[in-house]
Length: 116
Image 1: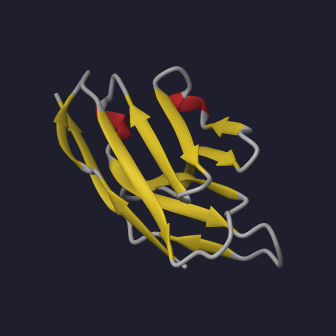
Image 2 (image 1 turned 45 degrees about the vertical axis):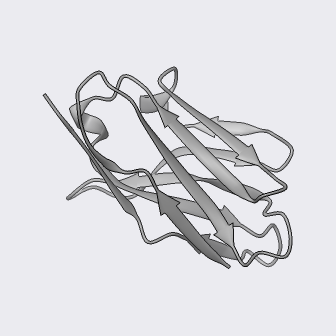
């Protein structure tokens, strides 16, 4: 299984971006899919996750601004990020959980830079 991310970039404060991730090669629906981020000098932190049953979890700093959604049939997850702020600048990593044997997958990361 490979997690293929798209949608990062550089934007101005207050604007929006959408990140997408596809679990390529998966022959089953991943239990959990979501996003983590890591800024320089910081630890990787939770942004948002969603289970295959629709249960979502958000990091405190993004609640009310970011929305995660999944397509179980296509094994894709989308993160809609609104009202972006400079502190959202980080590398965003797609994350997937198989749901068995603690198997997890990570994408290669996509840079999001917010200025202004």
